[in-house]
Length: 269
Length: 157
Image (cartoon, rainbow over all chains, first blue to last red; front, side, top):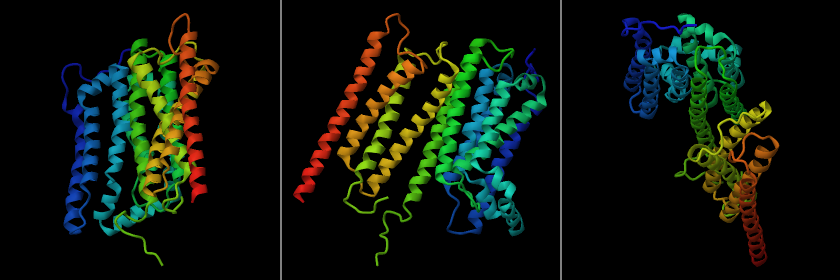
């Protein structure tokens, strides 16, 4: 099977469309931030959140440049770099940017109400549960690498696009279910989130070693050494992203343990 | 959570530090033996599938242990219930305990990987496990000593 290649000679305008969409999202975020600071004088939108969101956007842009995309179509290592950036690292920084909270602050009341109403639906509550988010995120990876889907994808460009969108959305959903700070009516307990994160780290480590050992995706056009190198990238860099996620989860636990800031003394009767 | 300031939470201090010990020993194993010396293989072709699965689970547990232990210790310190001697003892018990576990269960029972791929493995296994026992014994010694000191303090006050 020949790996699929869009434009062997140079890149056309169409190759830049994903980046344009991502930059568009960044511009909307920046605009919303300016709008928010104008509307609510004094309580400015956190700079840290904005920087984090733009960092996430930058990671997406790097992953979607035509050079990396072409590499990712032909080489499993390139594919893995894209997967790590789009599905694991970018979501962390995007979630820390709390775009939903910002949207709720600046959106017209009607829109904000609709969004809040969606948050209250049972479907949203099920989808945003860490366990379901884990299934969507990890399940997607297991299906992609352990079934013939990967080889299918190499010959069908639309499947490539679907895969990237799935990585991003499932990665965002999972990260959000673990460390999200947006105002939703229901959130899983710290214990549940910790346990699901544990399962996620274990299943990611297992999948990448399994791919290394049994050379998955099988019967792909990639050489055995290339698959092993890609599996190592997945193992170590995936680990780093999950270590980051663990630290962030525990940071929120640490902060929630102390309802009173250190400078204030609790009122004693 | 104990709010009694000045009253150290002895058990938790030890547990939190032991978690860090476990995580650090796992990190040493990963960085020094896998990455720097390349003695261990990333994957050893004799590893059975169950070994691969337990390897993933252990790895996740180690990663969570080091982060959880660190934040737990921070939390104890903030609420002024950290006992430093107990934490020191717990840290060594964690280090030694994990290394011994790695040497016996991972290497010998589950056969995830070996210390080094040479003909005569015995000196490596012995050094590994004796070093583990030493660390564990240091931890137990520190623990006993601390318990004794605590008893004397209790008797004095």
